[in-house]
Image 1 (cartoon, rainbow, N blue to C red):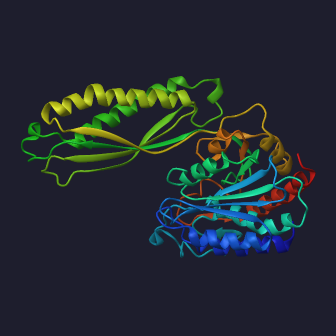
Image 2: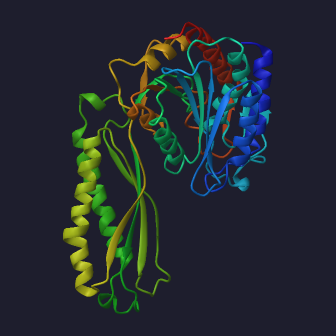
Image 3: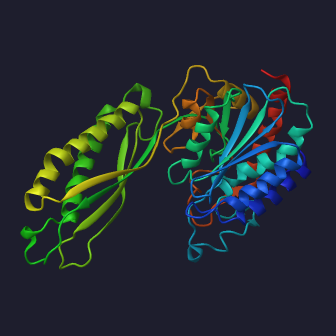
Length: 391
C-alpha cells in the first residue's frame, strides 16, 4: 500500500463527502462521479435508476465476464446532519489529529473511497476472477437500492459468489448480524372535544395500548435467547418504538396517531411470531373496541423495510478470504443490520468488514480514523492475489 494510493483515497473521500446524499435526496451526482472514475480505468459500468429517476445503483465490473466474482459493496446514502450540532460543515471533510470528519466518513464513504481509489490498480492486473463494485441507494431507509440490485443480479447468468460489505466494523470480520425490520403502524379514530373522551376514539390512547403490548412481547423474547444467539448483544430479539406522531391539541380527542417501530430478530421465526402476535392483538382486541364507537376506525401497518439478518454459515468463502487478508483470528457478530443478508439470500458467501466504528455512524462530528483507512487499503491490496489466482 503506497502513499500515492492513500492520498488518492483521501482526495476521493473529500469529493464523496461533498455530495450531500441524504436518503431523502438524490445520489445521482455521486453516481456520475463514481461512474467517470470507473470508466476511466476500463470498468464496465451499469447504472440503474429507481422509479423516481432521482436515485441510482451502480454496478461495475473489472476482469473477465464470468461467474464467481467478488463484490465490494457500499451504500451511498447518509443520514441527515444538523449543522448546529457539528463543529463544522457536515458536508466538507476536514482532518484533525489523524481523524477525518464529515457526514458519511465512516458510514460508509470511507470504504467506497478506498475501493474507487484501488480500482485503477485492479484494472491493470489481468484479473482471472471478476471484481465487482456495487454502490447502492437508500440503505438507511430500508435497503431499497440493494433489493433493486439483487433483483437484477438474479437474472444474470454470471453471478458473483462472494460479497464484502464495507460497513464500519473497525476492520473486524463480521460473519453474522441480526435482521432489521421497520414498520409504521397508524391508528385512525375519531376526534371530538376533550371533555367527552368516551364519545370519540382517541388514536393516541390506542397506540399506547399497542406499544404496551409490544413491550410485553419484548420481555418474552428475552426468555428465548438460546445457545445460537449468545454471541449477540443483547442475545435476544429486540423491539423498540422510535417515534410517535399524533393529535392536534391537548383538549381535542386525537383522530390519528402513527407509531414508528422496529424489531431486530435473531431468528426469522421470532419475526414471524411477533408480527402474528401484534396482528392478532389489533384484530381481536383493539379494532373491536375502536369500531364499537366508530365503525370506520382502523389500524394500518406499513412495512418500511424487512431486511433479513446475516446467518452464520459453517462454510463461507468470504470469511475465509477476509480473515486471511486482515490477519483476524476470530470472527464476530453484531446487532446492527446491513445489506449483507440480501446478498446471502442470493446464494453468495458474505462478510461485513470496513473502516471506522459503528459508534460514530449517525453521530454529529462523525469521523473515520486515517489508520482505519490504511488498514482497509491493505485488505484491498491483499485481495489482488485472490483475484489474479481465479477460483
